Length: 118
View (tube, rainbow, N blue to C red):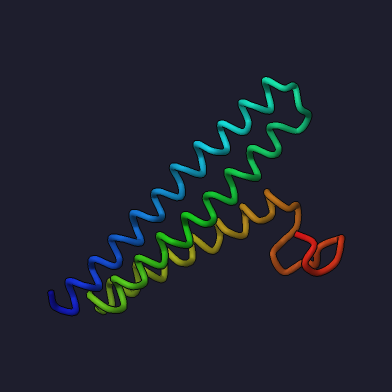
């Protein structure tokens, strides 16, 4: 196995991990929400959205890491780097939006309870 094949394999492995995180996280969030509904717990929908948002953030991080590995190591052409830049910009926007949705504040804003309260 040469270097390019190893890097491609690593990228695919991280892709699989990212998709796995998305699927497992969404299923776990749905199961917890269903349990909360059955137990008539308040705030089930809000907790479901928060858990799902955290799952999406982690999955996106892994998928972007795989894209970076493949783009930088395997096909470092100007077109692939521009596509990667666009993907990272979209991911950053999604991350900020999800963070605002989950916590109610932007990532650079301090927690109302102080540092490390999350």
